[in-house]
Amino acid sequence: MANQLLRLDRSGLVLLYIFLGTLREFGAGQIRYSVPEETDKGFFVGNISKDLGLEPWELAERRVRIVSRGRTQLFALHPRSGSLVTAGRIDREELCETASSCFLNMEILVEDTLKIYGVEVEIMDINDNAPSFREEEVEIRVSEHATPGLRFPLPNARDPDVGMNSLQRYQLNPNSYFSLQVGGITDGAKNPELVLEGTLDREKEAAHHLLLTALDGGDPIRQGTVPIRVVVLDVNDHTPKFTQSVYRVSVPENLSSGSRVLVVNATDLDEGVNGEVVYSFRDMESKASEIFRLDSRTGEVSIQGPLDFEKYRFYEMEIQGQDGGGLWTTAKMLITVVDVNDNAPEITITSSTDSVLENSPPGTVIALLNVQDQDSGENGQVSCFIPDDLPFNLEKTYGNYYKLVTNRALDREQVQSYNITLTTTDHGSPPLSTKTHISLNVADDNDNPPTFAHSSYSAYIPENNPRGASFFSVTALDLDSKENARVTYSLVQDTIQGAPLSSYISINSDTGILYALCSFDYEQFRDLQLQVMAQDSGDPPLSSNVSLSIFVLDQNDNVPEILYPALPTDGSTGVELAPRSAVAQAEPGGGSSGPWSTSSLCHRDTHCGYSQQYPRGPGRPGQS
Ligand SMILES: *[C@@H]1O[C@H](CO)[C@@H](O)[C@H](O)[C@H]1NC(C)=O
Ligand SMILES: *[C@@H]1O[C@H](CO)[C@@H](O)[C@H](O)[C@H]1NC(C)=O
Ligand SMILES: *[C@@H]1O[C@H](CO)[C@@H](O)[C@H](O)[C@H]1NC(C)=O
Image (cartoon, rainbow, N blue to C red; front, side, top):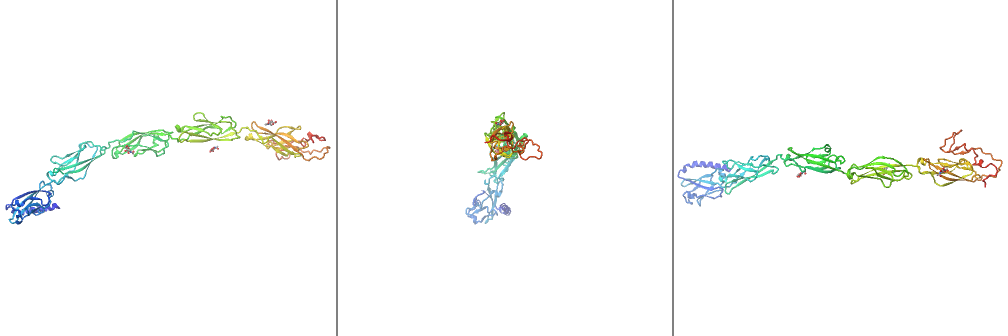
């Protein structure tokens, strides 16, 4: 806007020159002044009254005035002193831009004589402008492999001042990588360029901060700067490097699946993908590939399957780290598996018997067994024991073999069977143990005879008893079992008054019940002494005898007696008991019921010993 006004003023000036051209010929001269720009209003430009040959006071009287239209605001006449002064601030750069010299022309008219004078005022430049750059910052991108000598254009600075007050030269802050070169001599201070002097390394310095300064030649010198940022672009010139060349780690075998084993780490000094390391297993046995997992991004090695010290104790692997640019390196990974007491000992019964005869001598072998533990070291050392209170010993034989033997004779009648708990424990911490049971029956040996509850028995039988009447029973117990405990009873053979005992008394061999085979007569027998034998069915059998006294009880069965003639016999047959085991005899006319049957052996008189001992007739002995 100001410039446009200025141009209008100028075209006005030209017209004025043409109009006033004739007036000048009336002997007017050219007056020259010079004034520096940017002075305050009222600054003295020149003594115009003196240069016109007038007294100062005449200026008003002779109506002297500036006729250049449009310039009046720049200069004014000071009537009292008769001098030309500035009417305002004058900016040379505004009036004349970059022209090397700046003149302003005007005319002074002396109206009473119609004389016109030309006045030329030179506006002197002062260094009021500093060089400046349009850019706030300059960024230059350069590969770290760029060769020295490479050039990069830099922006030009501007300074509207003229001459020495305008831009004279550029400067770059001192640094070892770049220098500054400025265009040809004729161009003076134009087209600065940045020249690469050294070798760049992004990993050492990723950016360089420079400062370009533009300077003018004024007094004092004014300057403008622009920062230059040189960004060094990465080249994949670094191989990843593992933090260790060998990674060693020990892991317990019971580590749960998914647990971290270790983290490998390779670093790459490059930037972006050139510095991103991807991990992988390089050389791996198949046994390891099932177990270990490597996270390709984090380098974390974890387990995905069970470790088993008893199977594999050591793994060796090679891991690779590769950057996005394809450079790679390797490291070794050694994993040692540490035993954990994870296996309980095992008991194997190699051979055993399920029964042992009682009274077997001490040292009789019951079982042979083997204990094992798959763990190693303390975890695999085992000991084996049985409860103290049993009549057995556990003897170590060979290696981890043990022998279970009796340590005394066993008695079936006391303990019929044993449930032997075998415990085996390893020496791990905490220890693991296993129990197993061996059940052992004690087989019977016929070592107990049947025994009667009493050492002797007494039995009573009233006289005139019916034949076949049971009158007493004996019982003997046998502590043994089965056959060895099956008791049979019998009477120890004897004769009474010349006749076999068995013709008077019989005993049921199974039950021990005694029967009278004939009717006793107190007047004939008052008592009988006999032995009952109880015998088991063992081999050899054992027996015991007990004495039994039978007393016949008197009843009032005798009337004063006529001794003669003799009474007739009743003609009955005698009876005898036969044991259950006796072979049954065919009985004509129907069998018999009951444990005994009539026997043809007993043909005698129904009264015990009647016919044999005492002939019928007077003088019967034994009567009291
Ligand atoms: C890898 O090692 C470098 C240098 O020792 C370290 O700065 C970085 O944090 C490590 N990375 C991991 C994931 O541990
Ligand atoms: C032996 O005893 C154990 C427990 O004490 C028991 O579990 C097992 O069944 C027993 N064995 C026999 C044959 O009784
Ligand atoms: C019992 O008596 C019989 C016959 O006299 C004899 O053979 C046997 O040995 C006796 N038994 C005992 C235990 O004395």
